[in-house]
Amino acid sequence: MSDRSKFFYWTQLQTQDPSSTKEKNSDLDDHSIISIDAETARLWPGCAEFIASQSLFFLASANWDGQCQCNFQSGEPGFVLVEDNKYLYFPDYRKNGRPTILGNFIENPYVGLLFVDFQTKISVKVNGKVTILEKPEQLEPFYKHAAYRKAVRIIRVEIEYVASNCLELPAEENSE
Image (cartoon, rainbow, N blue to C red; front, top):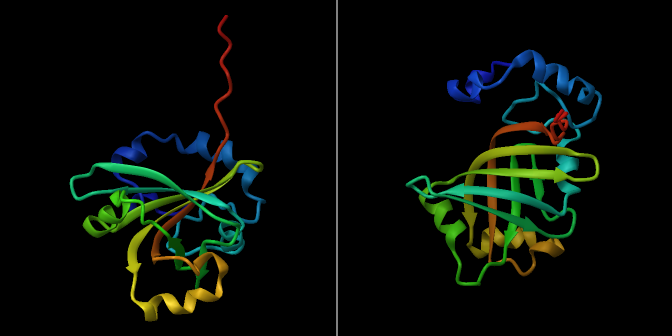
């Protein structure tokens, strides 16, 4: 088992029962993107492909004062690009007068992304640090990808933590 203390605060670790969590997730060990011990700063085999196959992800950010925002980003499968299993890129088209997330990126560049496949109930969460790419020379290499041709900027996330999640809902308790 990995040293979970480097990824979680002690209060978070106190709320987890390691034996029941491992038992609950043991059936996921054989899936190509799932690894109970894969709490790492790089994507593992199969994970990049999983991310690239998704048409949306949830994005959490916070400003300097800790006020959170949660939004979703969407596009055709493949709109999130992966580089060296260490960086994720996605286009930003925003000119809608609601720059909350971009402002958060400037004040506090740390973000959380959640990629979910609702059919298989598999998800991957990624925490990382944002860099906003806006200069023409930064954008130009991405224009070969259709999803990036109209982007006003590109968001790069340097992966600091990645882990698989289980979407299993708790069993309904008998009310009798």
